[in-house]
Length: 287
Image (cartoon, rainbow, N blue to C red):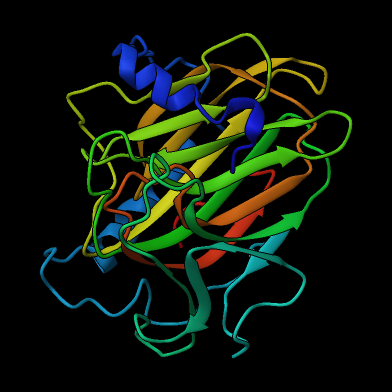
């Protein structure tokens, strides 16, 4: 999710060829990091199939909501869209169905329109659900099982999964994205001096995969509730993919989940499913 104040930031960065320096993972691992890795291994064993296989879902049974979660959405109620969320679509469709789940219980199914190019006509190709949460303190974890039919079709067109934002007086936010080479990017429009838009450096050792269910975790952290900067980590099947550092922080009070392109560049067609979405102040893991 991005707004007029920073519409051209990622494209400007790409045109200059500016890439961030590689961040080293510090010793301050998040609580439950070892357990999360173990959980990711188990989930990877369950979900790990060849990209060409028609794998039907992330788990044998419906997901469960961990104790103490800020919000939990399993998409198992049979509704076309879940209640208590604000639906946001732009040249895309969003519905709950069971076409990619093993038990048919339901997952969030998003399809974006192909051929959308903001260089020709302004507008995105994206669909997501947004919900208000308690203002961000020092730790936040977002977890979803994600199935993508394909990665973004060209370099420079970033697909957005998760957004943290604040629309009140403390306006700002940032979003987790994926790129054509499977690496992750972070678009920081918190309006704090810092990284801005930056990406996981190449070569990509751990990245997103298409054609199978992936456990995608996003960790956001800062030292105190008044800290203006912090870091955010992304994990794939419990394994750390990248740690984005020097990220602007605010009292974020909205979370969005979905998929699509805020800045489509032509090959904007995609089909994606999300399931078992959990937001918590503790590490969730993949189960």
